[in-house]
Length: 189
Image (cartoon, rainbow, N blue to C red):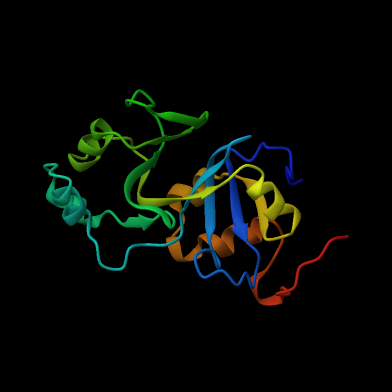
């Protein structure tokens, strides 16, 4: 069941409906980290920066990093604050300013976690993101009521273990939607 208009989307994935015309969000999976009366904050988890390497990012931040950091994909988290660096991560949650999303997921963007990730001493599970997605008061609720998004609870497997190219398809499959037999039209029952 979808938590439509309940204001309780924190800890859920938003999946763009098939055929969503907005190029910023077409075929995206967005992890909602905060949702309240002032709006919503989320991060697209299935788009990778095509050029920026982990080493380049951490060098730009003047953070010393392990050479293996280059293997870390830098995700494009959304069109808002495109130069902001964020980390969606598993435990521990004792980083400065960590926003705990649920029992196994947190969001941080302070230097302490970035330095730990750069040294490969951070959380076991994490995603580094540039930018975020944001919605004003009731904006996301209205978009869901207009059938622009589908929702399911966040999955550790999809967030941290699934290949980025398969995340949208896998979340759709969890909802029972197979990508080759969907309609690009949405409606209300």
